[in-house]
Image 1 (cartoon, rainbow, N blue to C red):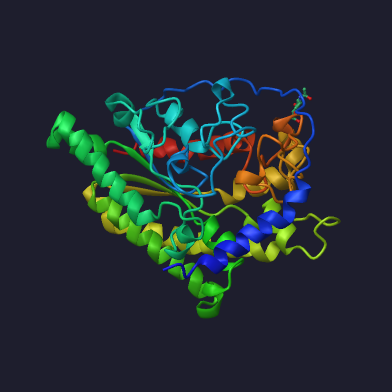
Image 2 (cartoon, rainbow, N blue to C red):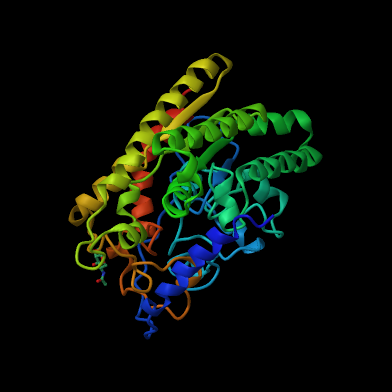
Amino acid sequence: MRGHSFSFSFIFFIFLFFIPFSFSTPKPELVKPKPIGSYHQRKQPVSAILVFGDSTVDPGNNNYVDTIFKCNFPPYGLDFKNSIPTGRFCNGRLVTDFIGSYIGVKENVPAYLDPNLGITELMSGVSFASAGSGFDPLTPTIGNVIDIPTQLEYFRQYKRQLEDKIGKQKMEKHIEEAVFCVSAGTNDFVINYFTIPTRRETFSIEAYQQFVISNLKQFIQGLWNEGARKITVAGLPPIGCLPIVITLFSSETLTNRRCIDRFSTVAVNYNFYLQKELDLMQMNLAHIGSKIFYLDAYNPFYEIIHDHQKYGFEEVSSGCCGSGYLEASVLCNPKSYVCPNTSAYVFFDSIHPSEKAYFILFETLRPTIDSILSYF
Ligand SMILES: *[C@@H]1O[C@H](CO)[C@@H](O)[C@H](O)[C@H]1NC(C)=O
């Protein structure tokens, strides 16, 4: 039953090992970024935003799950409205929040598991995502988080809730007009394949990439079967540039914090195959009015990191929280040092981008969002 306890202990061991890095210092005064307005430029009827995946798009579902992959405590959320630590792995809003504003459905996308959501909030969109999740069924077991099939099951439950309120026909139209966002995959490689030995024993990296993509395709097919028609799927970021990856896998962790190319190359190849597969799916389904879009997270982040001065970033290889080298989740906590200016950091913790980096990524995705909304 607990066949994965080794991997869990291993990750936890890494956490504990690096706790001494999390020196506790007085919290400096924090600078708020400029408020970000909503755009409301929709050209097509859009009913809702519905989100699936991992911490890149989890607004706090893990608050309701028995896992250590949580962040509903400061300094997370320090640039969020009223500085609320919602459970977003960020100092502020996520890309899906910006997309929700942009398509005019809601300002922030709430967590589906939040028991306080009313029907209006449910109708305009929720996220089913869970930090630590991934497409490989082994990945979510490492942190005991919500796996992708369960996220799909929650979506079915969500549809029944809507059907009870507005009837089957209206519910189906509502789902057809919703924008779907799927974002996961980093954990399959970073906390699973490269960190614990299980998958490496049976899969070459090429075979593992194909394995992850085939699980992803199965999930997209599942969404499609449930009525999803406008689906966006994010690729992997340059994973060799994540501060935690540099810390764990660089031969000179402290002196040379350059991106590790052999990790980013894995993301490049994965994205190449993913894009091809999504194009194929789109070709097969286009005649029934579907749009399946690949969202490029790689090139925008690569550009932000390598040309950081252009965007006003000063620090690209360590996070704002703690030492910036290893802290994420419980290791980035109320006792951690927090950098004085989150806008100068590409990463808020050792894995997750800052709100400013997410906003720049969102801006680069806008043309794709536009083409979804004007297509039909
Ligand atoms: C914070 O950093 C941003 C980006 O580097 C810069 O534009 C801004 O002036 C900084 N704010 C303060 C108070 O230092």
